[in-house]
Length: 261
Length: 294
View 1 (cartoon, one colour):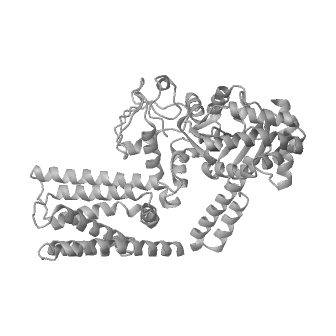
View 2 (cartoon, chains in turn yellow, cyan):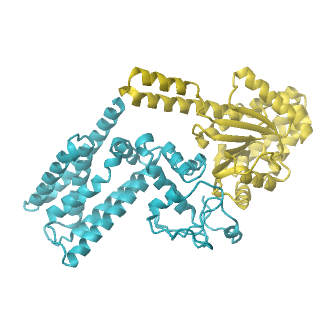
View 3 (cartoon, chains in turn cyan, purple):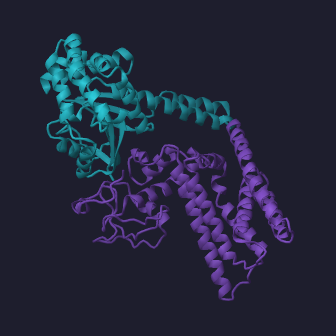
């Protein structure tokens, strides 16, 4: 798995766009929207290599924070100019509201690409990049508000261990969110999807990234991954409550959610 | 898609936030009401070991899926109760719920358990108010039965009951228009309507009116109209202690009493209901725009 991602790292984003026809951006947006993070949330994004989830999280939190500040300013209309000025000073430098993201990935190359992207796009504060294994996270217990793993859990050898680690590092009340390819139950769509996956994607892999094998592996790993209900049961076994899933695009992708209660 | 049935193994797993119902070492005996228990709960990582009985949830399931632990519903119940404190500041939103979760020592992400528009919070509040009203009316009835109080005439009884119920809105009155507009969303109408009708039924039950002038539906519709219109008047009332509202209420109840004496009773009831609903729609939208401007 490591070598697959080493070779894939630089072309990862381009391949994502071409394979999913750009829809992966929508999927990731939906994930963040579902999370609905409030400022001050501490997010751990596992297998988040190139930082897509992290950047979206920052954008969301920043706009929520802006709205909060606007509302506060409206309330302040009865105060003197001095007081308004002071509160404005205080809040101006807190545009993120203390929210933070730690992006954790097992692959150094992916993290490197992510860091470069962050610099390029102008994300500086509130982001950390940590090398780590989802089956054995280098973090303390009860630390994070939200744990996400987007298109990463199918690459984990022992999914149950990853889920247990997720449970461990989450605070009580914390949320587990998993975005992953899943099982299409509709037979017609399923056949079209299979056709696309096995015929088109490896070819794209060869053409764009010069790597047929990795993308062949990708498609096969998607097929081998447990379907929605089975993953839900595994998440429950790890100790999560209120486990639920939402199918996107008829099951091509599913978002699983659980709470540590 | 919620899993209703858990394998027995799960009951044994130490839960991070769900508290034990039956416990080994008791701390201070909790005699205070369930609303106040969360105040004595220090933010910590260990499951608290305070005695706690099963509490009714407004969904009516009263559920405990595993024997020894508080159910998810009870925890949600506690979070929503804690969140009410933050409503005057944040409105009926997921933010208020997140703040409520924080006071219980939970992560703000726990607000994700609820719908992002805050509708569960409002429904929870309304159901809590209804319960409080029932208890109040029950107590009054007991006093009458024991002979310690006079039985009130129907019009006074209705006035007092509606006033008592509306007074519960006073701490949240600033944000109540927002709550009303959320309750009117098609998705929420079944729940909000059922809460409203059960409250009205309750009031009539304790009013114990045996008069044959009204039939059952008419009584319900009339009181619903009175309640809704009074509520809307209250939202825009700036008189001291809402005296204008109570006077309006008195007049409406008097009208209703007089209505029973006329032959056009059924027709006016229909009119009253329609007027009430039309007034509701118009006034809520006005209230929303005026509060937005404010």
